[in-house]
Length: 391
Ligand SMILES: NC(=O)c1ccc[n+]([C@@H]2O[C@H](COP(=O)([O-])OP(=O)(O)OC[C@H]3O[C@@H](n4cnc5c(N)ncnc54)[C@H](O)[C@@H]3O)[C@@H](O)[C@H]2O)c1
Ligand SMILES: [Zn+2]
Image (cartoon, rainbow, N blue to C red; front, top):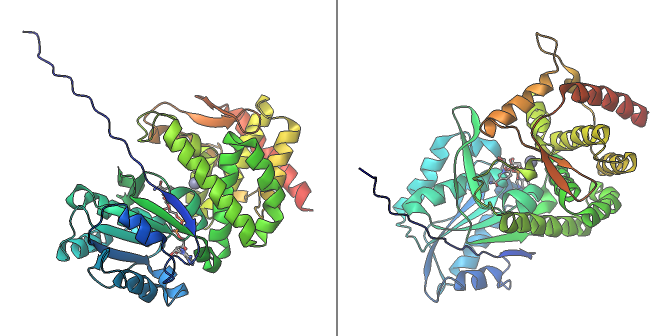
């Protein structure tokens, strides 16, 4: 008998604002109130979750956020005092944290129209976002990213995840936020590693998407290194815009396909972080990963010598080291351990390798195989060059 097939098809469109401000919870700042009003003229239940490191760095934050909502009772019904969530990967490594957040939502009878306001680094946004996406199949999430990476990358996108079974981001959902509110004042209390981390991601996206932005980053590099806030404001805004543009226009916002352009430079970066037992931070690792793949591109003729020098010079002026001794560590059979990162990345993609490479500055394409001999020689030459440069 012929099977009977009813074909189902529909699309859902998403829209959310990514706003930039300062003093988000200052009594006179109307941004959050206006954003919430867009959900309808009625009172909305609201719960606030704050990264505990941010709360320590900004002791007035929890009180200010609570007062802001309580002073607008016609819009917000603050169901509980702001709750602290362990900052950094601690919250993503422990399923109990998600359980605790869900318990707060349940205890306070949060409904599908309620707001969950998450304030913190990319990790806290991921954990709270995951819990909010699961509860009643999804509440309205307002993200308030407090790191550079959060404001220009992790916080502006459409997904969340937590780590499980020792695997990073194993559990997660695609769940576009209700709004993203970037308050640049938060960046002031960042440790240096978190400040520079988001800069590497800006170089990444500029190199493959926007030559003009890349040139501007190279110009801004010394100021970025010296924690110039105006320079950082420019970086965050353009980088967030490029991310949003990518999600909107690449035709695959929920990542059904294999291509991961925003993973440029990441196959070796992830491996290097892991090999160093996470002593090398993500941003620093990404800077090295970008340099390695750019060197590869140079050897293949996809970048000119001048373009490669611009990439390496820009990253170095922004404060990154482009060499780490672990790059030349070999495993039992004598091959470079870093190459395993390529195999891990391939497995992560589901079998077929797909690495984004620059083709000139501001343009990209995908390669499906990489020549290990060229990577070996790229590593050797990087060591030689980086040592020459550092003398
Ligand atoms: N969902 C996505 O699309 C996406 C994309 C990229 C990265 N991520 C995730 O984001 C996480 C990394 O995010 P991150 O780089 O923001 O780091 P993070 O969230 O780990 O924060 C780094 C540290 O800084 C602290 N911190 C945060 N804001 C601070 C502030 N203003 N002042 C002082 N300390 C502050 C945090 O508590 C933490 O200890 C990773 O878990 C990664 O997987 C998610
Ligand atoms: Zn990254």
